[in-house]
Length: 453
Ligand SMILES: Cc1cc2nc3c(=O)[nH]c(=O)nc-3n(C[C@H](O)[C@H](O)[C@H](O)COP(=O)(O)OP(=O)(O)OC[C@H]3O[C@@H](n4cnc5c(N)ncnc54)[C@H](O)[C@@H]3O)c2cc1C
Image (cartoon, rainbow, N blue to C red):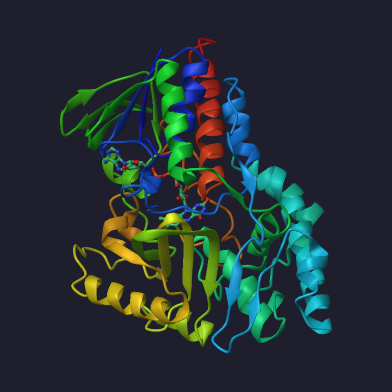
């Protein structure tokens, strides 16, 4: 059997590996000229993901082919947080060292909220992360078993109230799934456990190196890659996809995986793109440095975190944004949250000016020997993310944490995987989506064809 995978990001690479392992002939179509998707990088500077969590997921996928994650190291402190009044907090994996930096009241709040995050994560992981997209029955089971502990009727902002420093600290984790933290449901608090409890890791060469390793492995396994092939449409036949068209011609296969943004897939199929609220986008400044600086993750909070999110919710780039900075050798990556693009936007005129504004703020907070820089605006991110929304649909409201599933419009030979669907986003969960989603497609194909796959 033949399979086509659209997209050579983490999800597409994992899906291609899974299908190839099952003995299929696999071709990956990718619009860019190299693998990695959002992690593609600019001459060694990260363009997207920098925080590696849940390394057991890439480890297990690589392990299925006898490979390991070479050079993986835990990072400590996990991230260094700073507030405009000079307060600094640098949590470590070791709880005692973390609590020693807090007042007695803060330490009680931190312990309580960390325990709550752990309970939520452990209660949700089987249903919402490591298995197939949950059906109604499993959701009910989860609701009955864990429902109350997930605080279903509470917003995150109420759950994590813990003073002027720890409240924004705990709120921020929801942005890892694209949420506006003030509109996120309480259950997104589970993300805090992933970073604070399970840890942050570093790989030499960053996420780009992980993508490269997966790509080289896939090639060695016999996966074919066609770079510079942009998918334009998918031919929809009754119950299945018949073929797909790229800017280079038509391709057909027995099975199809879309590992690109779910909204793109719907557009290629000629299906209506849902008018749902989108999650956040980002504005980044990529920097090359004239001398090496230590590895680190830094957050510089804005003076008023709620006001910043009000501006984003109103569709504006925040004037006093919270800065995320990642430094690694002679590269640095600066990121702020930004609203997704209004429909039809192709170029934000003030991109360079906004980047200069961010660099000015950075120079006061964290001076760096910058040799060259480049801005990445939501328009740039819109090449891999519909309207620049990095994680697709906004995870807001009561069922906000429930990601869209893998099935698309009743087409049995197509699966949608990646950071915009279950259980994404983020690098490890996108990989898991690709791996498990491809497995699900194989079992569907097997049923459809009487046991072929
Ligand atoms: C600024 C930023 C910071 C982030 N920080 C982190 C972090 O610190 N840690 C973390 O874990 N995650 C982070 N993420 C999220 C993480 O990068 C994503 O969730 C993950 O990379 C998604 O992988 P994917 O394979 O699903 O999608 P993508 O990486 O988007 O891959 C999809 C691929 O499909 C291709 N494609 C799209 N359209 C077409 C077409 N028409 N034809 C052919 N190919 C097409 C794209 O070019 C792309 O290569 C961050 C993301 C961004 C943007």
